[in-house]
Image (tube, rainbow, N blue to C red; front, side, top):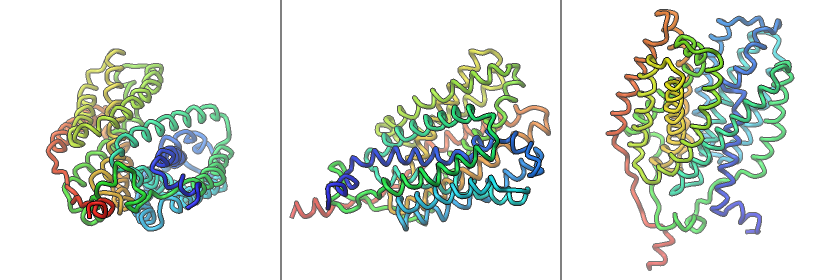
Amino acid sequence: MTRDQNAFRSPAYGWVIVVLAALAMVGTFPGRTFGLGMITERLLSDSTLHLDRKSFGDMNLWATLIGALFCLPAGWLLDKWGIRTTSTLITGLFGIVIIAMTRATDALQFAILITLTRGLGQSALSVVSISMTGKWFRNRLPLATGVYSFLVSLGFAGAFVWGRSQSELEWRVLWFELGAILLFVLAPIFALFVRSAPNSPQELSAEEDVGIETDFSLVEALATPAFWMFGIATSFYGLVSSGTSLFNESLLTDQGFDKKAYYDLMSMTPFVGFAANLITGWMATQVRINLLASTALGLVAAGLLSFPFVRTFPALVAYAITMGWAGGMITVLFFTIWAKLYGRSQLGRIQGVAQMLTVFASGMGPKVLGDVKVGYGSYLPAIVSLGLIAFALAVSVAFAPVPRRKFERSPVVESISS
């Protein structure tokens, strides 16, 4: 093996993979709600697409739900072909679709293409991204995930800043630029630098060569109560987050706050999430994952149930810190849980199903809050109900049985012993 090949196979190269995985997640930006939200008004004013708010909302919902199904083949390809080929292929296809969107001339073409952006970006590329770190790390996985989550948050914050600077640019020009970056920059980077983790006992890091834990298959993972408990819990947070994020300004207006308070809140929350990412990554190496998940959901419940009483700016700051910290914790835990509990062999498939659940839930979040607002004239019945559900999930997750993998001695250790 050459020196360059040794560098790619070194356990330390896992930290390069963490950076590349974060880059892949940031690359999903144009396929996500907040990415599309950056050009929503420009889309609605495009006379060739003939879109109104209701038709665009319905189109976006169905695109999200159908696009969620892309998680399953993405996970299968990841386990079958490895992270290098899969990340390059999906990123390249995503870039082509984004560029194709700029050529759409009617609502039907646009609906097909926006469904593909949801499927390839929000779903498939997200599965690849969150699996890359899990495929490389075992004992240090929580710490690596904390760093990864921090980098993702930083990257999305940078994307927002960049997007604001392009606010006057015609949406087709902007989207062409993003598609070109995906196709001609990110995809080649992944082809050149992404590598699968070392698998043979001789190549494993010193901290991992004392034994091998047998991995779960997808069917075995789905048969455990823990998969569904953690899957439902993290998906529920996705529902809450997508709904409150989309209607955040309106939520605050109903509570008596002005637009300045909304922007102050939006500028504050990411920094809270950054800190939560790193601290949770460290805590996950010290504290049972059940308790961390339960604590995070407890914070979500506390934030939601206290929201009806938020009437002053200090109370709003406390609410923002609570929800931001909970979001940072759940993000790290979602990226950590599946590899930690079920191993790496079929991690792509397992995380594909988990990601599909979160995408389904995220797609329903805005509809739940929007329908309640229309029906009751207030978001509060939905907010309080979601807070009670979060509390029930926090209690349930604390007692969820954690599956145990069989631990076998490594062939390396066996040979030394004999």
